[in-house]
Length: 128
Image 1 (tube, helix red, strand yellow):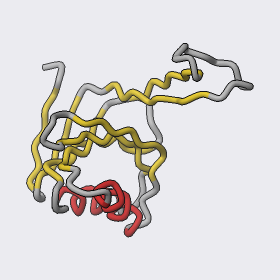
Image 2 (cartoon, one colour):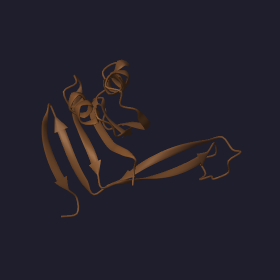
Image 3 (cartoon, one colour):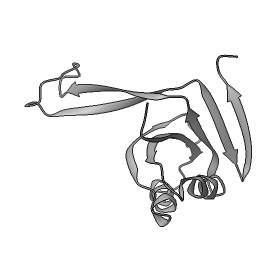
């Protein structure tokens, strides 16, 4: 299990400030980000940002604020989940050698989604 919340933010990367605004919305309410991964979904500039945020008294408010942000389509809380990490060396091989330079990729595994879009919420159970 995670110590915080797993989030998937879907939005349009129209300018370099998009990631900055996402992070700023969280940090404005003192919500710490443990890790972040992002990928482009299509040619129109739609991106998915996966992250783990620390649980705190302002986490729910920060998620709602994020869902109302310009260029954000939706924010989804990936519930009942865990994170699997993979370490890759500079040759692209999986590596656990502590002396090697490596990149760690975090992959969330989850079974339920609670989503928010402009303050409206929905829920999806992936196993039922």
